[in-house]
Length: 205
Image 1 (cartoon, rainbow, N blue to C red):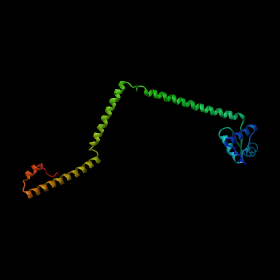
Image 2: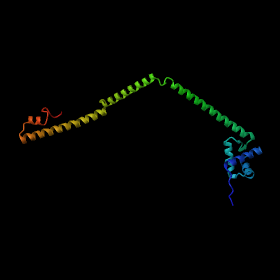
Image 3: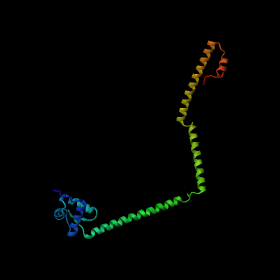
Image 4: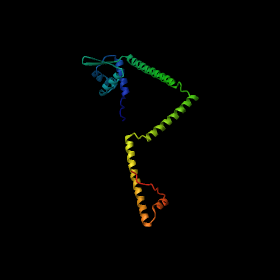
């Protein structure tokens, strides 16, 4: 035996709206919870949610009088709601079209004076060349930025390391010259000439 198919949310909305249109009366929630299950097959538990969805969509009116809330909907309610919705969409469409026209006009204004002429192409080429020269000058300036404290300290540190290395190798050369001179009895000037050593070579202060 097949199970009974439940009523969809849209069908419940349609049925409850039909109830209002057929009765054309004012109802409280408790009254609808009694009538809707019997006449329209809507479960008691779902009446409140279905009713609220119709109110939210402006298909059912509601008004609080004292401590009670009354609900009603007349046949022309749906027509009026659809008309208002259509008018709202039409207004949004007009606004969108107006914005589109403004954007097109702004684009056209931005294009004025930028037509692809030979003069404009020449000016753009000149601008690109000047910009390239400027960027190259900036790079050279950065390379020689001795006024930068951090760069100055780094250069001073590198200079000290280089000076120590020069003096170390100078000391090694002097040591080797002295050893050769004593070992083989060779004049220092001969060693300088043979090994292309600058006679004026000395330690760096």
